[in-house]
Length: 118
Length: 111
Image 1 (spheres, rainbow over the protein chains, first blue to last red):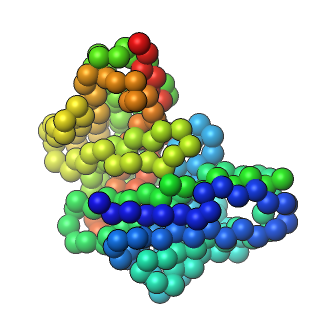
Image 2: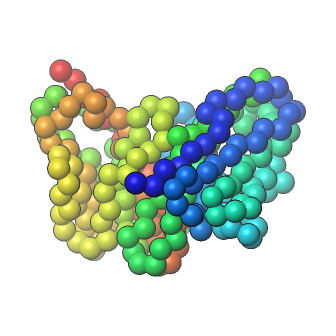
């Protein structure tokens, strides 16, 4: 099956610093990648949709200048949390879509990155 | 808007059967997914329904009624490892790959 990796799996940083999270599709080319955030006991909240070679589409309420997304290739997307603050502490999960035509299309999730901002 | 409702928590006994319900009101519909998520891990795909009826896959089955905006996930022969959160997600746009997730149902399987 399709495998998606994320790096790092866990990061602790000081308030005000920037953190970059990488999402890679290991055995397929992902036309579209998604970034989610999940707070404890909450569901996944979509932050942005990223298509290779174009600007990401951000969901309402997500600051595009704070959460920088780059999708430079069909196998790599990065999320940079700039000037992180304690309220940005969360579980960040990426997913990738094969982008095939047809209704049966699932997203393959990475293992997630737990961010703790002190 | 999009609204997906699931029970917050459920408890069931090892070896039993449990049904997790999901109701949705979305601006469009192009399929409903069920994911399993263990604590601290990413979701894993369980099932997909786009037409009405029951889809069976081993111990897991998923049912959809589009007219009622309703789905359920049925887990049979429960095992302790089935303790996890179960997420219902709807793909609302044709050609769109975006999913809207419910808050998830935390299932606890007890001996």
